[in-house]
Amino acid sequence: MSVAKIPKSKKRSFSSFKYSEAFKQLGIEHLHLWELSITAIPPSSFLQQHFERLKQFDLQSSEESKKLIIDAILLEAILSFPKLKVWKGANLESNELQGAADYLISEDKAYLDIPFVCIVEAKRDDFYQGLAQCLVEMQVCQWKNREEGKDIDILGIVTNGEGWKYYKLNKQNMVYETPLYAISDMAIVLGGLHHIFQECEKNLDL
Image (cartoon, rainbow, N blue to C red):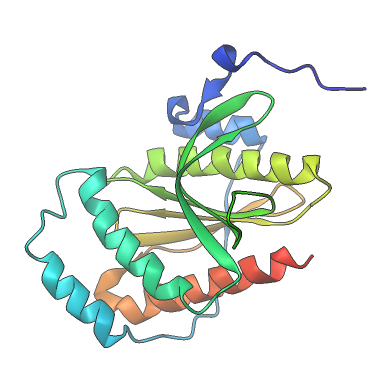
């Protein structure tokens, strides 16, 4: 039995979801603690120099300014994973939801294609709103993958550039959340991203 498609104009946007609504959308009531086994990875001299140069930019007043930090850290971490590609502002939609993901990670191709393996949601400081959007975007990634016969865990990241939290939506519809990692300990943030991207690459082959 086919699922009736909702007209695009009536599809709900990711940004309209409040924290509690996102939980209800996924049919969950709690997040489960996710304790990563992180190996600290010191930042390269290139990243350190880049952050020195960024001091001449405003890095606090908006989400766009925060993305200067996020871009630099994601680039540093993903260089070790040549199978992955980051898409910024990628459009996503399911049969009932639509919107643009701040960052969407998929297989390295010249075009955006499933499997979608990770969502990154950038928020100035509102982690609750960032998580709400991340959750529904992860669900849409899962839906898109399943439509093409690819049933894998979806990873997620919510960050304001200075604090980073990592998430996993598994095939049993359970969502796991790590503690907050701060860039004051950049080696741990990079180690956490290394763990996430490692899982992403493994999921490409499932």
